[in-house]
Length: 87
Image (tube, rainbow, N blue to C red; front, side, top):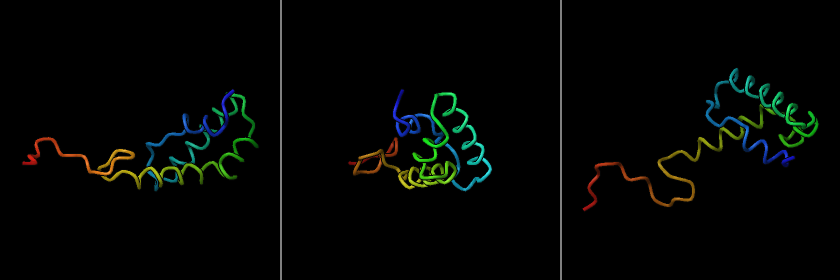
C-alpha cells in the first residue's frame, strides 16, 4: 500500500475553484470515501491532511493557483504566445 501522502497527491482533485466551499466539501467527502476504500483509516487521512481534509484541499488549491501565471513548473521564462514573432 502507498504512503498516504503519495496517495493524496494522486487522488486529490486540483481542478476545483478554491473559493467554491461546497465543491471543496464534496471533494473532501469523496477523498474520505476513496481513502477508506483504499484501506487508509480516518486517523491516517486526518494526520496526513493536518487534521482537516477540506482545509488541506483549500491549501493545495491555493498553492496550485498561485503557480498559474503563464509558466510551467520550474520554467524561468513565460510561455511564448503562438504567432508571436521574437525577431
